[in-house]
Image (cartoon, rainbow, N blue to C red; front, top):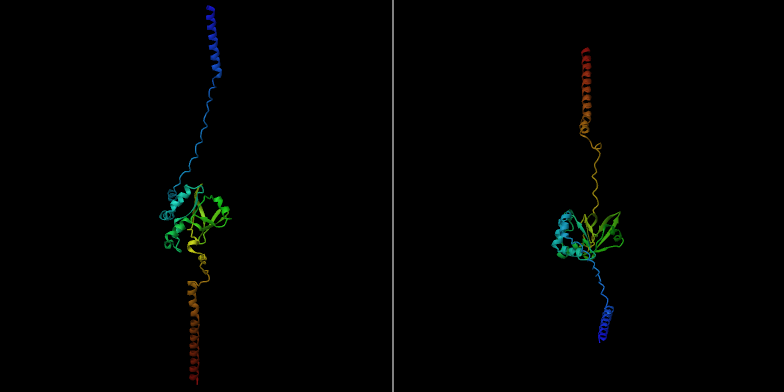
Length: 263
């Protein structure tokens, strides 16, 4: 009886150990921890450029800036500069350029014509100074004013020249040239043929230098004064002849008087 009880206890212990061993071998492996790949940070947006502020402090461009604001073209330039991938290139005339503009006058233009003229001073793409060498071989380049409003460029040993038909000028300095915005100073207002026509007035010829005669060719005061005695010489010689005649006449009369006394 005691033997059977011990036998049952040993069998129960073996069965328990085998079940524990089976549970350990059948349990699934522990999950492997997966490290998430960090998402790359988005590229920083380009810095917003305020063209109004830039033009107001960069140079004598107050007249052009006033036209930009009065025609609302400044909004078009701002949008092209900061909201497009192409960027913008602006040619800014100095204040003196507008003061010297007498004919034709901008005061005779309509609102639409004036707006187109201001848009004519920009290209819908960023161009560094080195890029104008290629533009010179591509013929007329369309401006922000549209298809009829084109500019011709030539690169003369690094100096960029612009030709609008009515205006011929050059880039005198770079005000701002960081992609996507380029601003270049020019010496003249760009006048498009689409507004002023093709009857371009000829370039006035340079005035001839005044013809100044040498001082030696003009009579001096001394020579004028010296000429007076030379003109008086004939009168002096005539008086001498009169005096000689009067002396001879007196001698003749004296001889005749002596002869009368002798006879």
